[in-house]
Image (cartoon, rainbow, N blue to C red; front, side):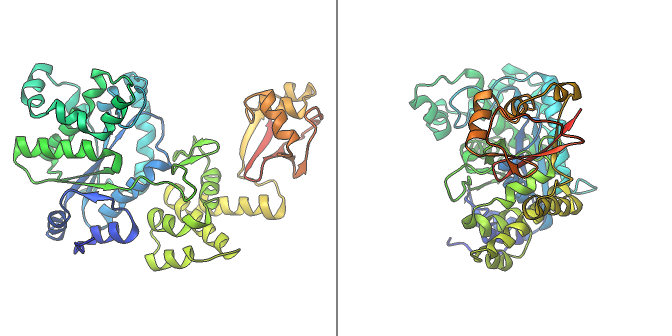
Length: 412
């Protein structure tokens, strides 16, 4: 990088590995050194919770506020009705207004853990405020005339879909215009001068900058973060069990802690810099450990990230549970609980039936394979006969699937 940042925020972005690209780094740096800047990141309400894939950009907003600036979390109450087609092979399922509202409620719970929405602090807005009541003809005349279809077709997010001869609806094609309009409105209403996002949003961000300059003759910028993959090539935020949700009701603090504890050795230092607030030198020191020592660094990573999201008590409890499960063979009081009706349990289930009926296996075939391959333990005793009787579980029994998935089965 030829430009060495002077501002505190960009120094953090560069030093900790958040920065992929910026439309005009020297100009943004200069603005940041001369007083607070307002920036936003948009989040469409496509699920009831944010997931770990969102966490890098949430940390960017947190650092933005910590370095004296004002972050905006923009909820896509309007744009979710259209759906972002970027790098997708097919159209997103359309959600109704009630589902979008429920999803926004779930997502907002997470932001409050990372940002201060008090007086003069972060803002939480919803683009439905200006998108829902747009007059279509006025919008086409005032905003649509600034967009070249030829240029829109050249963006990689759209071009890749068309090159594969996959359908792109006119509804989806409008998404980039609406997102560009968001930036224009946020600048007009709140003086927002920076949009941040993942590098897959570069084309959408550029559109917003061009539109705002054309309509308001304003100097604004875009900044993107890298799209992370783990050292073994997996998309960050995915696990064998699916998305790693940030809402505790969808993924327990213990399972969230375990996700970070299971980080690959080669990723520890990088993840400490991106997902914790430990000093960079300490992140580098911990990431350079090897052998059994790197496991201690993984526990620190898990504790730091879990503390930010769920609180220090949840992190301490998760670590204690993990120690009980893996070191002492105990039940682990914070394990996620699955239940079956007492009458069903009394009917004499086999272990194979128990796995299916409790939802721990999707089918009898999957349950049988899991058991015969040695992947099931009940109260730390391996079970390798699918037809073995589950028997009386009393007040509960610990189920271990592989080395990393543990549940408590209890009568309902």
